[in-house]
Image (cartoon, rainbow, N blue to C red):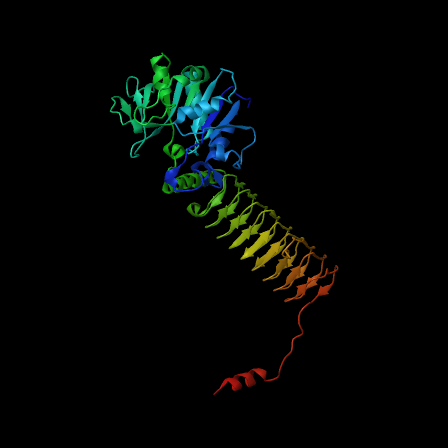
Length: 446
């Protein structure tokens, strides 16, 4: 897709005080991604000429997932949305061709498809302004759209801000969730917006009224409520998480993934599940997980930063960043894998920690095995070859290598490498005291 000449401004300088957090609202996360990043991600997919995020100056360097190629502008004082747009226009391209999207970072689930539909309404109807509208019934504190004529028409003449508490005829129960404005029109009117008599703030929504009075067509496009919901409280943030998870569950089901209890599975924004993956109940996918065709993820697993091929995971497994589970491998009950490769056909089935390791093909790791990869200062690597058998309750003290076809006896602490075909046993010699148990019990009797 070629770049359009449209610009996107994302308003993200609000305090979010009702969230009762030291972190600004727009940096809180749903699906592992900040609210602001969600909007940036959707905006990128419509391929605009530029994206400008308006922030508070003190958050200039706050890390964003999609920071590349994003322009930043800063609003020193919170004196209204029109002022924030002015701040963005200071760094916006001077070209007057196309439109400007004005989006809100606290409405994070707006989709690229909806943004494209907004553009279609504007360009097909030669509109000066298009409002992205949401059904506001049952919601307090939101402004309302004013019809230009019949309530059945999509033409509007203004937006009444809730804070202004104006009693106005011809309002419809739709509120503003974003704007698309002709660039030339925006430049014409942005400096003419007067402060509200009630709040003293300057609202970008006033541009609808001004454009209509000047003879421009103003329209609206109604989006889905779940997609355009905002977050001003922790409860609303949780509601957004629910909307996001439901959307992701449907997407994966539609793509041929089996979710036996979809409502119990939670996804990150970047989770990739290929066709014919099976996910059992109570699984959490954190960031950067790719599960490939044929894999089975059992109950109560947590995966992050990992790749699972046609393998079996769980129940009660944890995969941490940098792990790859290859075809035919099994990772089972209460096993944690970190920054390691479990090769084809290998089994790590019980009560085991494998960290910073390579496990070769068809190797069996016994229950209770630990790779001791950290000495308190540095991390070290463990290499386990093909067709190796590691007995239960073994500690492999890295750096160490167990070569192909070797064996390690149960209960061993291995500090030296084991050659191919060798059997290593490193444990204390068993001492048996004849009738010792009987004598011990007798000694405890009164």
